[in-house]
Amino acid sequence: MRLVVQRVSRASVAVDGEAVSEIGAGYLALVGAEEGDTVADARYLADKLRGLRVFEDADGKMNLSIEDVGGEILLVSQFTLLGDARHGRRPSFSRAARPEVAEPLLEEMRDMLAAAGVPVSTGRFRAHMEIGLVNDGPVTILLDSRKVF
Image (tube, one colour):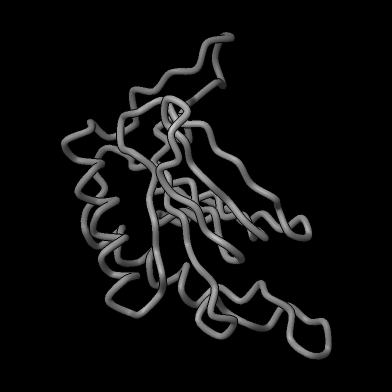
């Protein structure tokens, strides 16, 4: 699984002009599931996301986690994170997990974060979404459960 994590002042998701989710300060995490990913990948990334220290402490160092600052997380499914554009001009999405595999993995991440007490919202799976965000910093971190990068 792959995540693009953006530290945000606020973020929102709309579908067909209707607000679906909105958060204040925290993370917008775009989530891509890959063929072969399992619940272990979802749990690894949920734990990594909870512990990621990219919020500033009193000394201005990135030393605080989402839990330390009482932030929120907005998880948004995005299969295009698995797009491979190394050959030609049109990306291949053949490595992206099928929806029946990807959706439960996203739900596992959501449930694990919520069980840990982190306020978490989601987009709408398989919908065309409009994402609004204010990236704070900017801070953008890439995470991969297979530790590719």
